[in-house]
Image 1: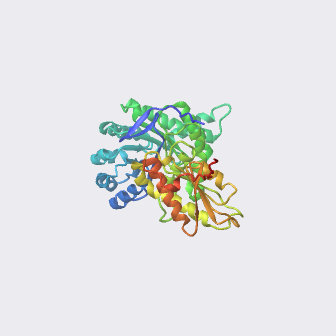
Image 2: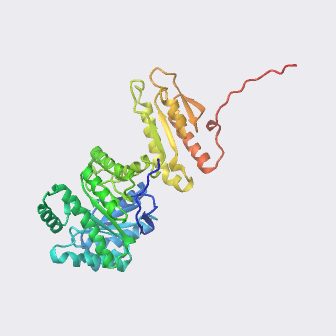
Image 3: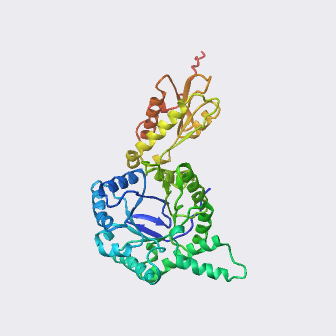
Length: 424
């Protein structure tokens, strides 16, 4: 089934295209002190290597703004050219004015219309930030957040709602305020001279159903590219499930041009996890391919050994580790499908459906592991080195299928022949 994407304009973020017919972009954000150049460079590089195609950094102080050009320079020296987005709140108008090198080094500005100023200061400070985006030729994400919504706008809309004969629920007014803040700010940016093709919108909330409702209406009412994600998804499995539930529905409806999975990391946790989750959401839905996928059964009483679990984990880790080198060398390898199965019930069938698969012996089964390549059995592995031998076969399959090298004998079907005696 093909998903019909919501039609939007296309924004160019230093060569990374968002919206239009472009693939859905994965992005992330650092949680380092941006003024700490070394730590921020290291995390940006790790996120980019994990697959984050855009990386956002906090620019909240003079020290952070002053550090951005050095961060960009060091990343470029490492051949890490991932575009950097500056996340501005409260004082962005001052920082972009006083630190021109920061404005130049960034590929995009993120502006939150809920905290660019209060009262009479709001429009002048928003105007300064848009003027700087125009001056430096930068696109802008106008990102509205549930937790920092324009209080004046919300109060006015609540008052108007109270005057209705049948007032709407408060949550409906809050959702409408989010949408109105984003769209009216985008229109104001255009009035100031920022081309519509350089505007991306987001309306982030923390609840799944609210996010779905807000983005459906946002997509109905505008054609700006949309940045998708819960603003605070949560930690661990809760954050993954919430992000997948919300974004899965919207992506299936064709809504969303760039996504971020905002996971709260465990103490000293790996920030790149949110990038992998975002990739897996898109790949599982058939929207993009990033790395070969491993199918593995969940295990049952027929698979009391953990061997197949360990092999599945080993193969998945091996594929991820190999992808940076494979990506440029073997076109199409990201679409490869590998199966690691635990017994004869579904093992042979799933293995035949994969590009290359192995069916390991379950409890009480003959201790052999048939390998299937493109639907046909090729070789049977046995003994204590099944893991190493299967890993080598996967590597050989990649070289042969995506690199044009000759296939090793173990990748070819071993058809049996029957000798027929000639009849005089």
